[in-house]
Length: 73
Image (cartoon, rainbow, N blue to C red; front, side):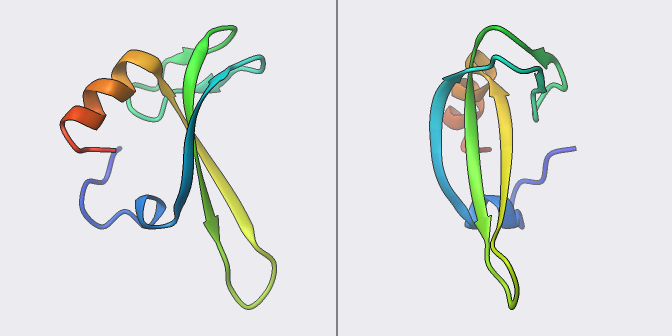
């Protein structure tokens, strides 16, 4: 489920922010539901010959910090 080394999302990441998840999202690490709580959102931007594509991943606040310490995110 989670790629460690060859992750194009990680290479194209433009920012990470702690946001309040008003709409339901799934945690990228644990697949848990994130809804009406604070969670980390990472945005990536892919540019090609056409339009620019934005992608986002949501993470549980505590799981993101643990993964960040393990250098997985």
